[in-house]
Length: 310
Length: 216
Image 1 (cartoon, one colour):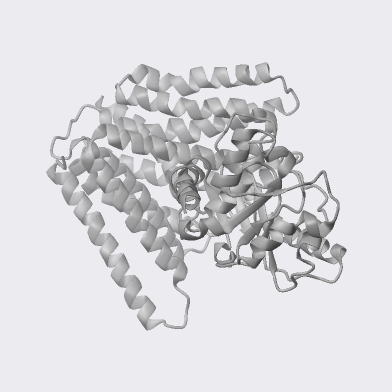
Image 2: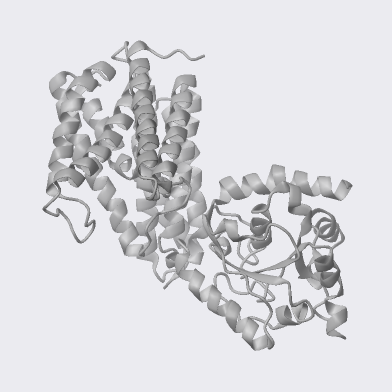
């Protein structure tokens, strides 16, 4: 049942090691600084154990189970998004169809029907949702609602489903297997988030987009891109079909677009004047707070890889 | 005993999973919920789901002690619904229509409080328009005016009117907010209590993540 190729197994072990290090670091810090409150950090690390544990079990089990799990993440993300953005009472029935698009989209993934997977949401759902809204007949606020519903399903279903399609692509790096691609994408995206944060904390001076996020600096951004690209040079050839140079390109792509994915969700929250999109993941916030960068990096990394190797 | 088992099974196997997965809750101050009776929860009312969501926040071992007060004319009108409401949910029927004396109206509620149970009492009276707050009624004051030691817990809920509004049969998943307020003790005048509950609702509303979604 648990048949994980060597390179992917090493990658998982490495992540496990980082997690154990972080947990030990937390224990030491909380012992030294007894006066300060570390509850938030504690919750954050605890949640990381759950997230990483769940992903590892799911990825190691079998492809269809993993697709069902990623589809469920799509559902949670879509529900969270639609719960906070402006909507009309009359949009309920159109929204119901958005949820129904999830099993279909992941069915195309499971059957490896690439053509349908790639057009189903941007063509069929995009055209169908306004039809459903027309049949309901509420024209006041029609434009705004159609735009919001379309964007919601693009981000939460179309984008995230690319993570699933990585699992069904023909294996070109047999030492890492299909799950190597997913491990690479998840690890690089999260690694970049952490690097940008750490570089920002260490050297951050010049704000990059203060209107959206006062904590983002040029130093953090450039440091993150550089570190992620360097790491990717080594990790990409081990886990994906990409060469060292292509790996550096993927690292830069993930670092830059992950940064913007983060800012896009930040802008949504600013617009709504809320701090988090939900409370589902203790210490992190909602599911969109955790997946923000991934909404951008998964489709963009997928198509980079697809263009170069498939 | 049989009724208690049915209630535990119903909430443990159906309501809790549905509330957790199909709905999804943003709960704030969950630790402020009463751990034992007598107490009264005073939530705002948008949907039939309100009661289910509130009850799902309590552990299964004490779920039989949480009793929603519900309109007799609505829930006892049909035999099957009446059986379900009385025996599975464990509602306390309230005869809104034939009020003769206040003491008689709340007789069953008072008995429940004496048994150290937790009442769910909607101060708005009815669900009304989805996500719009109706004028609070003074019933809650008359309910506890003779029981000064019983605390009232205002609870703000938002978003359920979207998932299952009045008169709709199609359930649509949305996250909803549940915010537990500071417990209040009874005041000397009905208006004071109602105003205090209203004030708490107004304080809790900005904490709702889904609230901005309905502003036009």
